[in-house]
Length: 110
Ligand SMILES: N=c1c2ncn([C@@H]3O[C@H](COP(=O)(O)OP(=O)(O)OP(=O)(O)O)[C@@H](O)[C@H]3O)c2ncn1[C@@H]1O[C@H](COP(=O)(O)O)[C@@H](O)[C@H]1O
Image 1 (cartoon, rainbow, N blue to C red):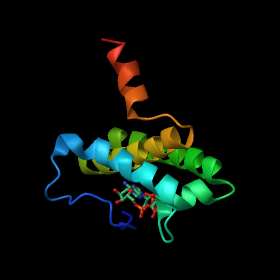
Image 2 (cartoon, helix red, strand yellow):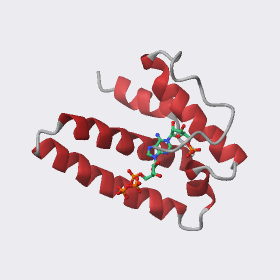
Image 3 (cartoon, rainbow, N blue to C red):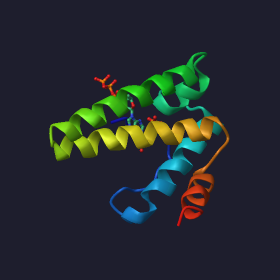
Image 4 (tube, helix red, strand yellow):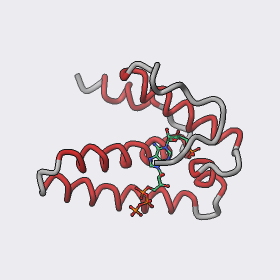
C-alpha cells in the first residue's frame, strides 16, 4: 500500500468506514491537482503513459481478483478488490468523472 504523500489525507482511525470511498476519491483528486512528488497516484497523472498504466493495472487487478475468488481466498479477494477499486477511481478522475457519476448510474438501476 502506498504511503500518504501529503497532509490532506484523513486520519484513518477516525474516518467512518462509510466515508472511505469519498475520502479516497477526494485524495485522488487532490493528487491530480497538486501532483506532489513521491506520490504513486500523482505519478499516474503525470506519466506520459499514465492512462495506459492505469488500464493495465485494472486488467491485472481484475485477473488477480478473479483468481482469488476461484481459490476461495477471501483475504486475497478483499485485498485485490481494494487495488481494483483504487485504480478504477483513478481512471474515473483521469476522465473527469467522479463518484457522483458512478452513484448516479447505480442509483438509476434501482
Ligand atoms: N489505495 C491506494 C492504493 N492501492 C494500491 N496502490 C498502489 O498501486 C500500486 C500498484 O499496486 P500493486 O498491488 O500492483 O502493487 P505492486 O507492489 O506493484 O505489486 P504487484 O501486483 O506488481 O506484484 C502500488 O504502488 C500500490 O501501493 C495504492 N496507492 C494509493 N492508494 C491510496 O491513495 C492515497 C494517496 O497515495 P499516494 O499515491 O502515495 O499519493 C493513499 O493514502 C491511499 O489511500
